[in-house]
Image 1 (cartoon, helix red, strand yellow):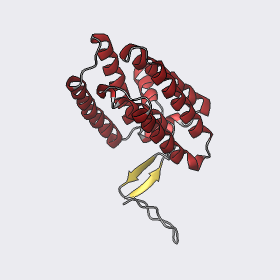
Image 2 (image 1 turned 120 degrees about the vertical axis):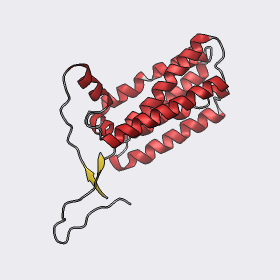
Image 3 (image 1 turned 90 degrees about the vertical axis):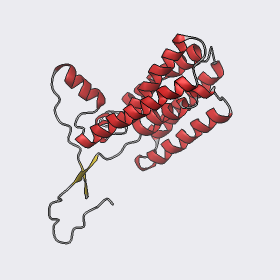
Image 4 (image 1 turned 60 degrees about the vertical axis):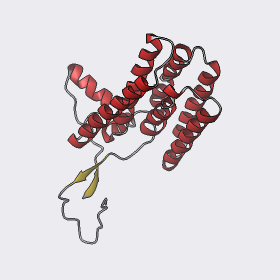
Length: 211
């Protein structure tokens, strides 16, 4: 199997279908789409089971907020990990990606003040971790952005396990939240696809193969 890098963004149809494609990343392969849908449905079902087994306290509103945010994070992890999304969102300048990440402070506020009943310390710590991690990744040299993202991600998870722990029902939140934004969204990657029958390489030129 030969790995081929494809930077070409296909045209999108007009109307809501085109808007949806542009939001998700135009040009997904069938394999990407199938894995995205299957992985999202499986993990959403597991998350729903977890929230039933370890219910959110405080009534229907905190439970509904947690469920909606959780489903969005699962879908966001799967979507932002695709080659199509990487190609689409990394064509834009850094400030647009930082703006997208900063908008997710709303998620932290919803969890802190609706679900955790005014957890100011948790909110402030995670806001700093999110924005500092995003700035670290976006200002790092291109070849250093992946390890920078991994360091920021691990730091965020460990801080939440030690300094600002949450109830068992929200144990997944930090892992999903920072995975979606710092790792899946901000890390630039070449949009690769597999080619079943590679063309014959010129004499003396080696092909890069993926095992």
